[in-house]
Length: 317
Image 1: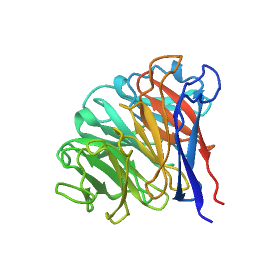
Image 2: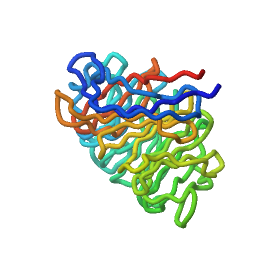
Image 3: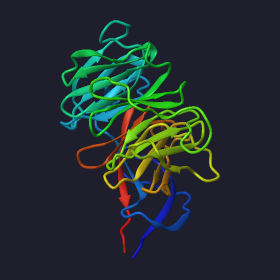
């Protein structure tokens, strides 16, 4: 039997304590396709302690091999590392242009147990640190890229760098050797308009968010486009992207205050608008990562906090 997939659109409210999503409007679509699709989101609430970390316009989130949350705290020009229990483990950086300093760090990626890579957007470079926050060197310098805007780590330790001006994803080996890029100028399949985020999935597929085109492009590991993920008939400005262990794609749209799930073939399966929060204004999701329990963490730029989300999965019949 094929797996029945249900697409649920929910206008949700986060409760002050642990709670659930309250639906004001639900549209249901049935399609056939991927196993274990994401058919809904349950918004649990804030990660304990996140309101006390002093975040200022944070931009990116990753999880290290110990389960710690690693945050690019752009407004404070630092990287903050926080434990699963909400305790601050360490911070490093500070404003400047010298080694180990930042001018608006906007993205980061963790190579588990080895390195933390930080995209220092203001200084147009990517710096590498060890797991204790010690500076190790530059992987990408300002002469190597014109407008770096997003980074990710591949399954083999390669570094993927989104260059907005070049409209491409430049790939570097562990030895900082530039490999064949993805995208670039031109027309047709796989051409990027205004790329923003990038991530590698469990089958080495590479997703590149492209808010300029209103889609997420998904490539294979050799650079051939597999499919696009979009919201038919809706404005869509995806930036942060993540894959779950089943190959489902989740995209965050900060302008639309929403997170969206697509199946492994790019079909829309669920979306939630993060509006109507009684605690504050609408959430601006700019970072996505999974904790050790498989729950989705959403970084809210507007209020400088982390939101915990439980994914609701469908089943194959």
